[in-house]
Image (tube, rainbow over all chains, first blue to last red; front, top):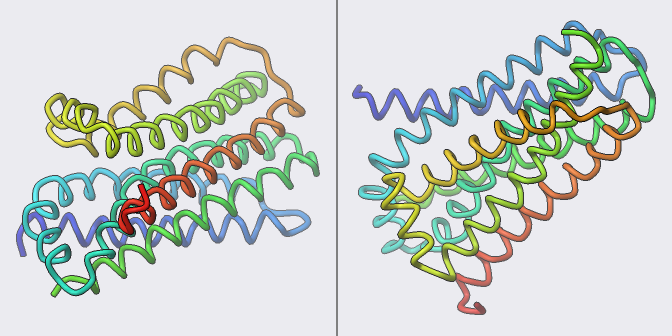
Length: 148
Length: 107
């Protein structure tokens, strides 16, 4: 395996685990009395994993995808996989680490001040990060499947 | 870090999300409609996507630094959480909608 393969594998695995952790955060946030210290550690881990996923995707995307993968998709039977889903995915992805950082900081507040209204707002923030993350992961699967 | 500092940092971070959402959608849609903008990002940062990534990190850090010094409370932060949710959704949907319309030559 070369460096590109390691970068792609790291991007996918760290991204999927980070989305799973956001899901975990969301599920705990809708509970009546979550363990805030645990949630704080989980959300911090998701931030770190999203950043790892971002850096490794940059390496793969900039050095390999545009030259070797994109032309195959665009000239193949499913050009819309790149034109719609890859284009949307690569840009929506940029928002997610910032949402994860904000989510972590909100949980740090909730650790000290369990206000119900604020907790509800934070659970919606976690849900949006989860929806966008799931879309990005799903689009990634679709784009991979379009390479012929 | 004390509670007041976390409150200020969180509000600044959420404001950063709002402005990054606007920046990414503007650079992405703007770059497709006005090619010199995309070329500028490519020529300056090696790749247009790297340009958008670097600029969004720079903007987020700038907002963290500038807005950290303004006072905040839980009520204001709750409002900013909802704004961050709305802006990130609108930004994502506008980019998705744009690429759908662009692919089918509606734009």
